[in-house]
Length: 424
Image (cartoon, rainbow, N blue to C red; front, top):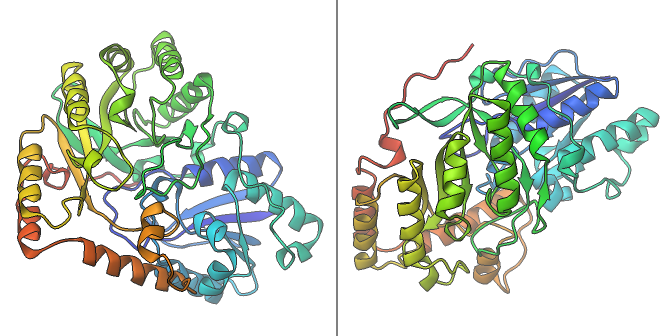
């Protein structure tokens, strides 16, 4: 069966375009089962579909689920276009939106079905059921498997995409300079046991790991396609230090000439572990700092300023570039706090990436601010409520002016020179 995995442009600014790792895994599994899958990623190419018999619309790629697009305007427009060009071909919505609000997602998009679950598990299950009986399209889909064991996944077939079209931050090992360039995405550990109230974790609290040998095999497969720089999507990469050491030792034993970035918490690093990571090609670490006084606000993240600053110092001392996520809005409208944030970031021995504190649906922060209110009936309504709450929490004009000053700092990632990204 000719099956298309279709990815719309998200309803948000794209500051990077990562490989669609979920589509790669799912398509590779489908190919192994004898089907003819294709990936059409409209973030990097025109929506040209080659005579599909079944279409899966991926409303949100895995790399954006934490900071997801709440609304589905672009996805709905793409469905309309595909319906016009390929009438009669079934379209099934998959991913985060279909899992959280299946009927709402089906209705908002005008698709034939809304399939919950992680794509690598749910898509092959549905294709098998649909191949046996097309009535599966209109039947109940709540029996679909919801999660996958990452250790059971194959090494993706990277020939299904043009790897040169995917990019994000890379760090030059010779100069230490940060820029944007071709990058591969690795997703080795799913889940996060922490419960920050602003953070949406679709993959659950339980840590599910890919074996280090499997990760190295994915690196090697991408090296064959010319990819040398990687980003680990794992929400807390260093959550299991023994796993990290095993992976780093294997990278070195295999002699892989790779460079990579990851993300973790300041509580989960130490100088010894950082040295091990550096020796295996780690060039930068994103820390979810959010604000230097994050432990003092009601966001359920007890990371002390002392620990934040120590982790940043230790990271820089190890020769790894510190990168920090920052949440505008954590100042609670206090201009003095905003100025304190400016001073903290101006003295940062690394780069920062800010976003605005947004209560996202299905987070603790959302529940806290919408308690007792009627449940939204569309994703657009979810988006309107979240936007209103964000604006209410964003603070006074004096704070906004300091934010504008912060965005002019040379170590804001938006001010880092970016070479032209190669597309072919």
